[in-house]
Image (cartoon, rainbow, N blue to C red; front, side, top):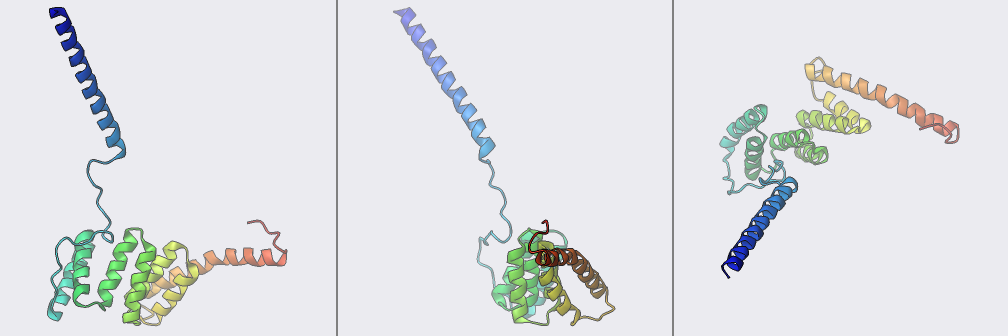
Length: 198
């Protein structure tokens, strides 16, 4: 009888030990597929946790400076929150909209960034900064025609001898030369009845 009890205890210890080992193993394996710590969200996807206080018109200028400083320092989250705070007070602030677009561009969300640049330009069609950044986003996406149009509009708003104008002229030349082989290939395809190789 004593022997049966000790055999039963041994079996119980073995079963519990096996269950624990299997549990640890499953936990370890599942942690490889399910992160234990939530990944940080992009600034665009995260919502503020506390209500954003509205700024007076006199506070917007200093808030823009603080947001720009955060963006320059690489703190996209702080910059995003500050620009958002500005837009809560002034929904038509082209500068804040444009800089939110910059954050989205840097976060590899060019389509969303372009929407913000367009929104900034609908508020202020002569806001050259938005055209400059929109052109860059379109250029990075491979939209040579759209980028060239944005850059050409930009050039009508800035001094032609400025560094930005010189840089944009260079980009327009690059876009034109990179677009030329595609146009020639398309023209060859039309003249040969579609027999040109892709």
